[in-house]
Amino acid sequence: MEETVRKINGSIFYNLYIRTCQSLSEIYSSLKNYKKAFYYQSESFRVRDSVYTLEKFNRAYELEIAYDKAVKEKEAIELKKANEIDKLMIRNTRNIAILVGIGLLLLSVFLYVIYKRNKIAKEMAIMLKNQQALLHEQEKKNHPK
Image 1 (spheres, rainbow, N blue to C red):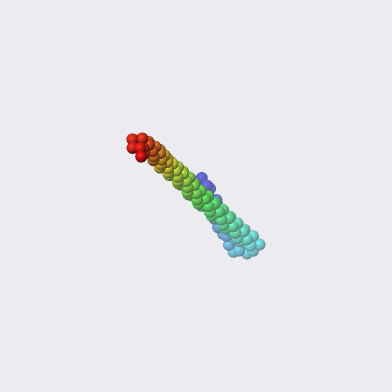
Image 2 (spheres, rainbow, N blue to C red):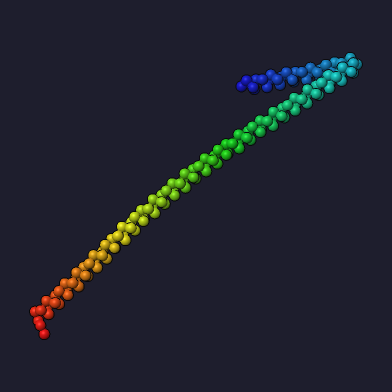
């Protein structure tokens, strides 16, 4: 707000000064004092050009600031998106690792169960073979040829 008031006051002062110089130039011209008329006319142009140049410089500066702000905001948004993507990738990687771990655990349990069944089946086959051998020997003892 203070800067706006300062700009307005400065603008009013410069416009008043320019108009005063133009008026003095006209007055001196009507009085046939061309040297002073030319001086005030030149002063009017000089100040008008200075004000114009200053206004253009200020506008360019404001545009540069606005551009820099927009670039920084865009970078912040892109950084936030990149962070979100990183978080999602980390979470997905973690979830995949958990699923692979669970899959390996289930596979291990399944293989263990199969191993135990095979072991029991082999033990039972050996026991059955032993029992058949015993039975066969008993039959030989009971029925000699």
